[in-house]
Structures are given as C-alpha cells and as structure tokens.
Length: 135
Image (cartoon, rainbow, N blue to C red; front, top):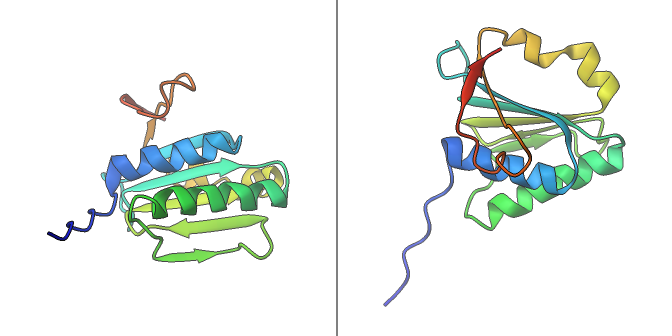
C-alpha cells in the first residue's frame, strides 16, 4: 500500500515552523504580522534579521530545509546570492531576512502598521505562538 503524500504546511503551522527554524540560527528581532485583515496578498509576513550576510543565508537555508522536510517549498526566493535582504515567498507566508541597517531603513513593519502583530512571547513559547496583539 502506498503512503499518501503529506499535505504542505500553510498558515499558522507554516509560521510556527519558519519561526522555529529562524530561532535555531539565532535570528534577531523576529516579527510576525498577521495580514489577513489588512489589504495584502499574503496572510503573514515574518521579518527578522541577522548580523551578517552569512548568518542571513544560514537562516534562509534553515527555513527552506525545515519546510522542505515537511513537504513545503517556497514559490519564489530572491536575494540569496547577496544575503543582505533575502525574501522567501511561500505564497500565504512571506519571510524577509535583512541586515539591521536595511531593516531600519525600509521599516517594513511600519508599512503594515494596521496588521496584527503576533506575540512570540518567551523563546520556549514562540515555537507555538498563541496570542495576537495589535501593534
């Protein structure tokens, strides 16, 4: 009997996996924005940063590997070569991994100020975030 292929991750389950992978590579200032009530093409934005382009690449690779292990692959990625701003688009979840100076300059979170910010709480709780607060 053949095994059914596993269903790809989506929504909050995908957010949880992305956050966990980013934390494993010591991503800093992880912000998760719930855009479902905002006018956006994605349901969630995840914005985080690494101190170097090498760390950003490691964060992106960890996210891709962890999700691939759960039968989930991004629709589109860009910025891996340079590593200053890496975008991973899973369609309903979009991940931005930036260097601190670029993150401060572009201030992506302020573009979506009407979105709910998901509170990751303590590191141990952030693997399964439950509460959402208005930013």
